[in-house]
Amino acid sequence: MVRIRESRAEDGARIIAIWREAVDVTHDFLTAADRAAIEEEVRAFLPSAPLWLAVDGQDRPLGFMLLDGAQMEALFIDPACRGQGIGRALVDHALTLHLAVTTDVNEQNGQAVGFYEHLGFVATGRSDRDGQGRPYPLIHLRMDGRGLTPPA
Image (cartoon, rainbow, N blue to C red; front, side, top):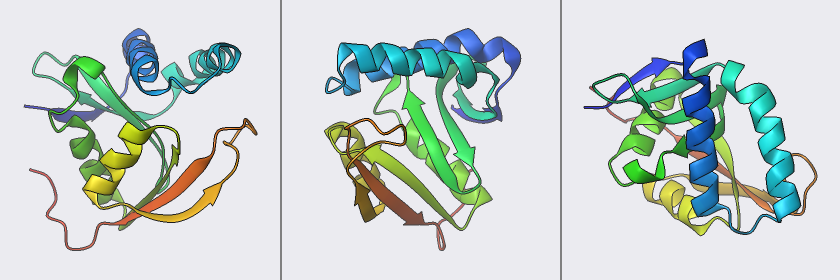
């Protein structure tokens, strides 16, 4: 059973490991230089960011989500745990906090695009570059949570 909780300082190393492993299997479109630069940025802020974690029965983080208001800035799942409903549980949690949730997804990350479409997110726009100005197009997505049953 997956439980959602807020992150704590001691979760930092595991959060970085999840991010790294997830990016390594889903972001093969990144150049090596961009991958290294992004990891440096992530290491600087992610461990202290206010994250929502999906944890197992032993309180071990399996995935995480970063919300800035209703904007989901990050959603990463341990690749060994994919397909088990962890991403859905985190999105459902976001929808218990907000009537609608928005996010951006790298257009070249077909797995993530498919995941969000499967959940019911719809495209609302597109940008030619990511938030740091790199040449990685983003698809802007929105999901309206009205009518959903809150997760148990």
